[in-house]
Image 1 (tube, rainbow, N blue to C red):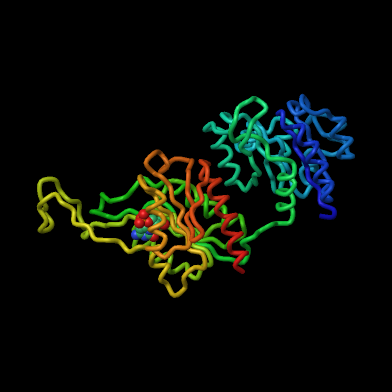
Image 2: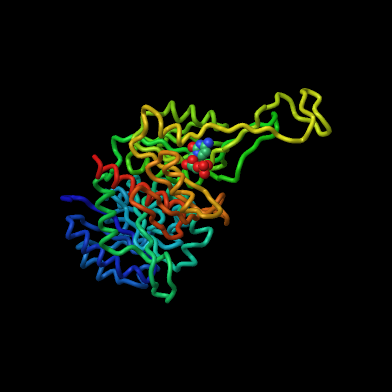
Length: 402
Ligand code: C5P
């Protein structure tokens, strides 16, 4: 790694002791560390041990004349190639997500123009709490990189996600960030997301509860892995990820046309909850209660016709993507339906999930990856983590096949 330098911000948490090990692991890889120790962090590791390991002064105080004279907080953030926050506490994450700057660590994070990598560490319930998940999502969208947290037994005796990633894993993530690791660079990806809306008349439509979250997270993960990504999205209420080309559509037929226009693509992930049926007639004026004034139809039934299947259409397309992935949202016999769907629709993989609970519209997902090799059950995780894991798996497969 030669002459690479990181700025390591150590938050307050029992995992802070692992930061010392991280400094050593990085040094072995030729990466030099300079450290900022928060007041809470200093309760867990001493500035002296950190200074000995980094071979440098440890910076602690925003208002210290000696610290500022040696190296001001703006310069601190600029002197490194990467800022690493380990452990990243709920407090540090909240400050950065919301732009708060009231100490050296938070001021530095706000002032940096360098990539930031966070290794969260906290109690499982804290990690899973709505505010922390919201902040993590905001930070990801702002381009912050994450490593961990891992599942496991914690210092507090509880079990679950929240344990800081091991120093080796953080060091590997640092290396990836420093070398601009982009496994999907040079490849094109197409992702569909959200519901489709099928008009009944100018004010009514048929749709479903899809929030678009899973598809947006996948587009984000693929783009961050270096793929040139097009996101074809039905109507949703979330912000598009950075760096993706967004094509907004309303109906299934528009979605199919947009997908075809986006070809060729190496990878396609069809995550949208496409309406299987649409009203046979989209009325030009609002249908009135008590019979139709504008047309012949005068009962309350709605005639439906089948929509094109986008996934199947891409499977049979002359420019079929090399890796074609569908989703299967089911409420029963999830895996059996997905296995059948994979062959029927001509997809390479199907990501199956049970939507009988609050998955649609929620932030978590438990999926099964169905491929020719069999079925893999993934544990319950956030939709962002599903996206991350899927993007990593895609990179592995595409590279293996290249
Ligand atoms: O048949 P089902 O709707 O369960 O299939 C789900 C998969 O097929 C998803 O990947 C979805 O995006 C895709 N699909 C499609 N076009 C349709 C219906 C579903 O691409 N008309």
